[in-house]
Length: 203
Image (cartoon, rainbow, N blue to C red; front, top):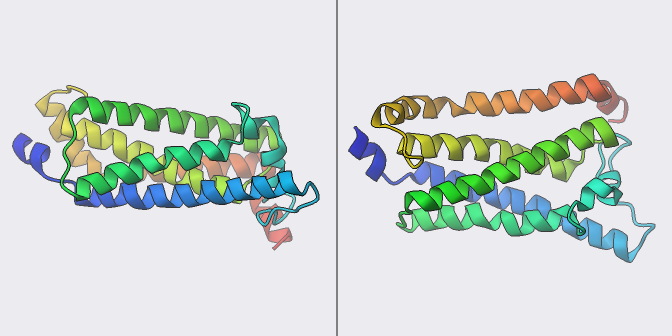
């Protein structure tokens, strides 16, 4: 069983990386364009400003929106190219060494940590739900869980054959972790912002 797990090319996983990367890249690119428009015309109202709660204007103009001295979406435009390239390479027949997967997983981990911080800032400090930001959240959460569990089942972290078999059996149920991540955001938004009522009132 170990040999099968190790050598089988993960087509579905590769497609997932490409699709998630493209969705995240489009969201980051659109948010970058919105930021550019606000810089050109300070009176410009971003298209993603739907209501006082669902908007991206506050997020873009805040200190949290430019953590490293430039707009955060620029990071996304660059970073989301990685899963796209990895996914396409796998589909083309590429096989990567364990160190590559560990490095890729470290990058995804850094991404989800940054996203988790942005989620907390958006909900608990800024009091907004940025549409494009939420699209990025929605792809980063499954990307982190699926990449991590994939690496564990493939033994890229040097884990034993027994643990690989365990994670291979658990891999199809990774969606449960993703769902729990989504539910955590919904619960926080509801408890802190009464999001459901507010969205209904402005719909």
